Image (cartoon, rainbow, N blue to C red; front, side, top):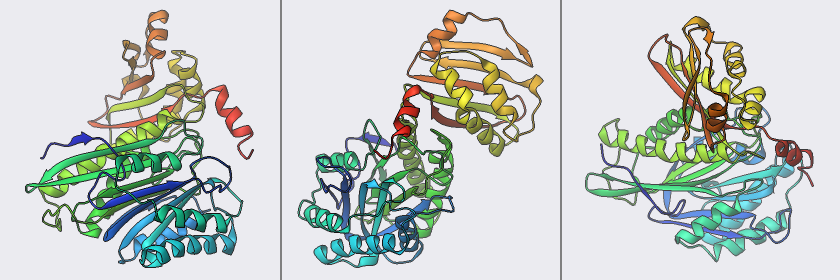
Length: 410
């Protein structure tokens, strides 16, 4: 398998992709709040979307495009207003946004995806969206800086932007895959992430790319949680224009495996960044479950641990109260023998076992606190019941989470 190299940049790293951003004043003045991604060369697309029955207008717009066989040219994203629970007016806003980009760049309306994030139930100011699109079309650029600023423009309560890019070789051709994401609150995906957009210059069959995306999402974005709330706007879209010149991937061969591994690297990085940047968070909270009876059980157990409010509060308080984590495992729905379970706390500061085969162990509380003060705390669980494993990522639960969400609309 080809080596996967991390490179600088994000959504504009791959050949043929340009980005732009602007201050459109969608909800707040004087802040970057719109972003655009564009490929003049038509792209194949793949995506996954929220499982929430209440789907934003933009999600429904994008699902229709991705599920069709039509090419995609780009994406327009706004922050501040989610365009969810907005009726026909919300769909009209999607069409007006896409039409503005279509008219300006001479591409089909149905080749443009739209994304929105922010407050649910507010109508979008279409005149500002259209003005923002027109401004961005004039500023499209393939520079790393434009890509980075686009990733900043899609932030809401995020404290840091999230972008990543990698390169790998396929048959002597250099292929690039990069992307950006946003998400800090209302994060409990059951499809993908809050918002994530990836671009690549790989040549690949659409159905195979969709299969790779669906598989990778299951072990990356679907394994994070900040607050247990699945958003109305969860959207993941990957577009690929084929400009790398590799032999088109039409079967699950070695090239497909390399692409899938590269996709996993990018998605895991972005997912971890989202989990660590949860609203009010001070730590990345990781659960690693090994030797479970099945992959499904391992995933359910790991996700239950990092989703528990009591577990998250213990991580925040540096409290090695292992009962919180065992309790979360116990109500997860997975059947297991607690007398086989071992539980450890890990971080850069060291490793400490606190539970062994159904029995609590005496341990150094000061050392446990030292371990749990690090920026990433890992709860490592050995089930001794098989050979399956899974990892989930979350964050601690702090006072600031409540403060942020108590006045979110203001």
